[in-house]
Amino acid sequence: MTSQKSTKLIFVSHSGEDTWVARQIAREIEKCGATPFLDKADIDVGAEFEEDIRNFLDQAHELLVLFTPWSLERPYVWAEIGAAWIRRIPIIVVLHGLSQNDFQSQPNAPVFLKKRNIINLNDIDDYFQQLTNRVKTEI
Image (cartoon, rainbow, N blue to C red; front, top):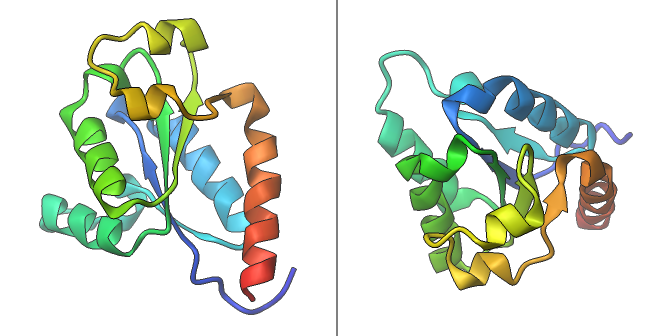
């Protein structure tokens, strides 16, 4: 791996119940040479939570959203998706504990998410390989 630090920023959106899994994803993103943003790791206690989230979303190159039965009900997850959609950055949908049918039958899931190439957590290595390739071409 190169010693040069990537400027590719990946926002990891998830629910609080999924923090451990999100940390593993963030760790793998770093191994790919990109810089992840994870609220638990990157926002100091007492900081302006919403402001920090907005600032990173303003800079992020991709949004990876971890959809689980818990995150479907989290307003912040949906707000982060909306911000990424408005900015027209790639949104990577990763399912854990949900089938693709479960996700696509959600009445509040927007069509623009349902049309994406959705992956299951067990297949996330494909995303990591693609991210590694994107980071390498960036440097």
